[in-house]
Amino acid sequence: MSLALTESFADAHHEPRADRTTRALRWLRWRQLRNTMGALVADSRLRASMIVFCSAVFWAGLFLLFLGSFQFVASYIDLANTIVEYLFSMFFLSLLAMLLFSTGIIVYAALFHSREATYLLTTPASTDRIFAHKFAEAVGFSSWGFFLLGSPLLVAYGLSIKPPTAIGGGSGAPWAYYPLFLVYLAVFVLIPASLGAIVAIVVANIFPRREKSVLALATVSAIAAAAYVGVRLWTTPGEALTNDWLGSVLNRLAFCQHPLWPSRWMSAGLLASAKGEWSAAAYYLMILSSHAGLAYLAAAVLARDLYRRGYSRVQGGRSSRKRYGFLYMDAVFHRLFFYLPHPIRLLILKDLRTFLRDPTQWSQFLIFFGLLAFYFLNIPRLGYGAQSPYWRNLVSFLNLSVTALILSTFTSRFIFPLLSLEGRNFWTLGLLPLRRDQILWGKFAFSAGISLFSTEFLVVLSDLMLQMNPWMIVLHVGMIAVLCLGLSGISVGLGARLPNLRETDPSKIAAGFGGTFNLLVSLVFIFTIVTALAVPCHLYFVGQDNPEPARFILSRSGLRFWLTTAVLASLVVGAAATIIPLRIGIKAFNRMEF
Image 1 (cartoon, rainbow, N blue to C red):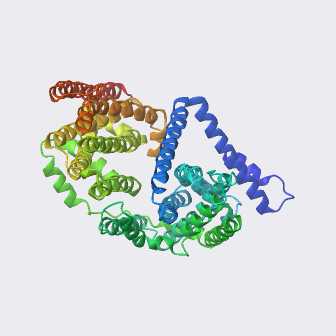
Image 2: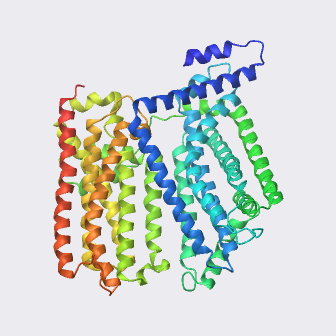
Image 3: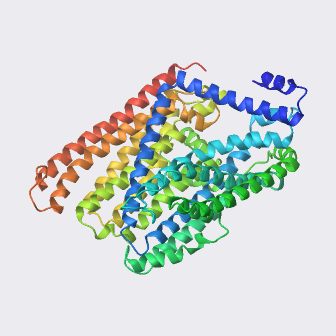
């Protein structure tokens, strides 16, 4: 690929150098994309099918959720338009912040820590052209989730709206609204992406040795800002979902309506296009486009002047001095896990340090579970605790399922690649004064420890906010423990059976065949455990909620019998999901040649 790129730079000598560079980099990007898609279809059809299927299910679920939400909002006739406008502004403001973070991190890694950037800086390509090439790649990686989240929202709104120009009771936005909102999304993405690139270049030039500290400080600041907004919404006076309460909530969200926010231009333009007000829609689209172009121009000029200088500072600013920040944590860790052999504790501690030293890992873990905790704390404000036992039971199992699904994502993304990340140093594991099975048991203990600590807290918090019975809390605690042990065993065992020692990026390892297969097995395991325990509880509580006799209702004695059977079956399935993958992984690990 590098030889072909060099030849492309030498071709077409009659063209200006900038045009030749642009053509060569565009050709390179196209060939990389085509080869990646071809390899995906030819060699990883299971992964491709899973990606398409899961994306379609996720999109359809979001679409139905948003459609039902817009229908619910429509019941508040007086505030319907205002609510939608505020919701759109807050939604796009949140995505603006997330895209700023994600694109900034990806651009920083692509510009200053990738082999391709190192090679391109040695070619005749100008600095701004290299930046444009890596910037387009980063935007593609960071914005696909934005389109996956934004498109079902906007399609649902377009189908639920009733334009004032509709004749005869017709509903739905004009057909031109649907292709137009795709243009809005594409233009909107460039603003946070360009700002993120500017921040990445500035950090590389000013704080070449403190990029992780800057990221940690930015993450803490974002969490603090989100917590401040959440607390203000949580303490809104009045009864939830009443008109007075909604008015107070909108007053506290007035900051998202500031006329200088790009999210405000985005929401105003989309609402205008959905109503057929094309002049207003074009006006806001031109505002977005001009600011997107200006932001990218500023990023390109900054990259032209400071990229090479920042690259040199990042590469030359690495320090080899010892760090002592983890000494206190090490002492606490050894005291808490005193019952484990010392070598196993050292291996677990090594994995824990690796996890904590990578902000891209712990920040995602913190954000996902932090959002869940924030939602669980706000359950009383949503009125679920005052609902019937049937609805509280239903919501509790839904909360538990969401927690388990996020946990499966964590184990597939971070635990499954642990052995593969040893890479070229994999042979050192064979020289340790430990049996190989102890190495895997150590990684299992690391995964189960983190999982149990975080998920048990969330499940207990959810049940307390829902005012569940103590025996249901105990049932959910035991259920999540079985899920934690099973998911940890699946990820560690399959990670040892299907390692990828040639890849250093954990996200690519998790996206490979082994990672996809691991996620699929984890989802089947979660579905089996949750369904086995949720169905008897559902059939019992539906009878409590509806006094009229129904066909499928369990009595208290029937609930005891079927719930006991389900608990025993879940324990058997959980033990099998924990032990069988670990035995398969240990067997493969023992036979592996270093």
